[in-house]
Length: 390
Ligand SMILES: [Zn+2]
Image 1 (spheres, rainbow, N blue to C red):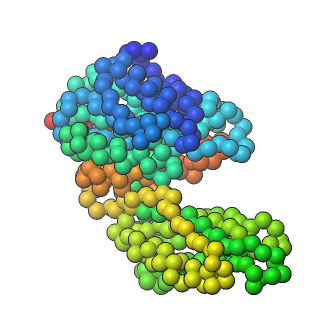
Image 2 (cartoon, rainbow, N blue to C red; image 1 turned 60 degrees about the vertical axis):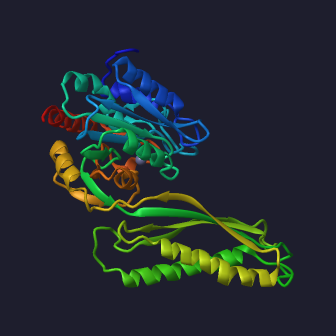
Image 3 (spheres, rainbow, N blue to C red; image 1 turned 180 degrees about the vertical axis):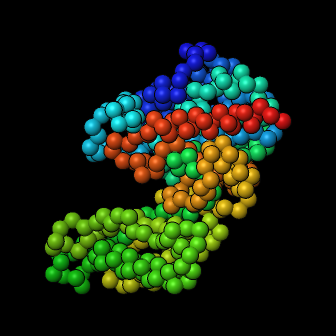
């Protein structure tokens, strides 16, 4: 496929065909992109995961100089398991409604499919400022790959002027989001017949106390934070996502697993509150469980950690992206992205701006509007023109 030129839709079709669900390797997609770039004479670098089963990739189109633009995207997608899809999720399908269906169309292969398809144009344009590609792995399971990718780029890429994270924003400019911290806490009790509550300890009953504790923390936060802010809702939020435990109606539950976490404002980290919750588990709840039975235990681990994305310091990227997208809307979003990691590690103004609507992300029959592909191509064109100038 060396040197082959493809159009954005064809590139998207090829990228969607790789089942890059986060539990799978993303190497086939990465190899494809690297071959494609190599075919156009563009070198790329890998930043492999520790086990070598996945990799981030970055590449520079144009001169290896300062002042360029980073286009960043994640290669993984969320599972389709159990979802009622009307079409094959791995086959890009255009329907008469002007929508292209397929897993990852909106979240978020379209953004870099469009940019990759334009590489031949970028190369012909005589860019004075480079365009960098940054593709990560395992964004959907806690922004895992982005840390080593951003660190490698901070070392090896001459300081860029702006970073664009192409998550779906309908091509509006997003300059902030909350941080997300997710924990899984496993409560271990001791089984006994439910009539003999003095002989065991129910993991579920104590997990329930923990959920109540988190509710009181939330009430405290709601009282503390002003009713208006950059974010909706304005205060940080705690959530218990899943509770799994117990075996039967007449048994004290031996195990109960609680998936919980919080979303924090980027400038008001909640690590102290998270630590306080862990301390409460250890110093208040656990002793009471152990008093009922010494086998009781509580273990917590961090499931994922997404760095908050503060609006401060992104003005330059905001102005550029607003120009290229033609959008005057600058706002925040409720979901987490890799923006905070890139902003923090490279120290470069960053925005989130990409085609498609987050409402379609993670859904069955995920789609991207053909008109959003056109809008993103316009963005890339104007960015390219800017990169041609001094
Ligand atoms: Zn995404």
